[in-house]
Amino acid sequence: MMTVIGISGKIGVGKDYVAQWLAGSLRANFPQRPVLLLAFADMLKLVCLMNDPTIEYEHVFGEKTPASRLALQNTGTEYRERVGRDVWIRLLMYTMRMHADRNHIGTFIVTDVRFREEAEALKEIDALLIRVEAPDRNWTRLLANAKGDESRAIEFSKHASEVGLDDYAGFALTIDNWVGAAPLDEAAILAALNK
Image (cartoon, rainbow, N blue to C red; front, side, top):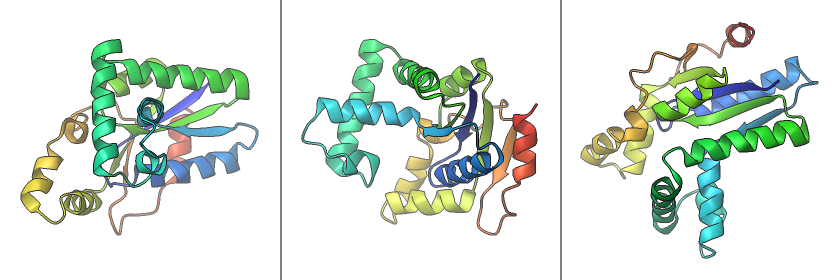
């Protein structure tokens, strides 16, 4: 049996931080149950690397360049149009199943749930969905991506990947990760997993 946890939130709120913290907590509390972190975007990034040998690994899994960002956007759009809107969802689901079967991974943490169809696909397999909120961190990242231009930051903040789950009611819990927030509540998260 697989346990799947989906982490959702806007850019810069600390989804990866929460996922890493949660993975450490689960490994400490359930050492017999391996944990693997994955992302919907991992599938896109791997396909992009396969399709364009001029793009370097560091520029899709690390700091993106204008060329790698464009390649990711084009690859994502092309495959959604050619294979289907759910192509990245299906690839992630197959990847989780493969690791569960082959490597006996018991718990998966999906670090980038940004769209309703992603959340719904995870809910269909009984995933625990967690929303991370940090408006201050989000705005800081938006401004950085917009190189200090507030109007561009506001434009970025309206992108579908930023607002797609704003009104979604399927989250089991919300984690406040803004600067000065209370520490992550391990007991509340573990209790939500055991429901």
